[in-house]
Length: 83
Image (tube, rainbow, N blue to C red; front, side, top):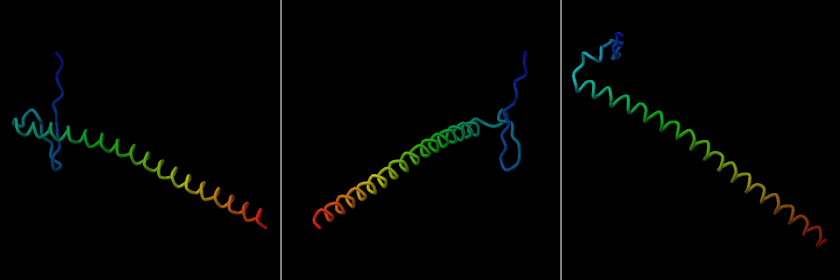
């Protein structure tokens, strides 16, 4: 039979064996671990959203600049034709 490693948590620099904590304290630990996992997932999603938002913002800027350059070329050509 293998010996199971005890679950040790550290609070305020002091180590506690989770098996020696009461039911409510273990429930808090479960909640904290779940919230940490959710926070990590949300951070991952926020990173993806930030990159996508930057891409679309830069694409819009380049598109607008491209249209301005086309319009300037068209105006210059029309002015030259009129002269």
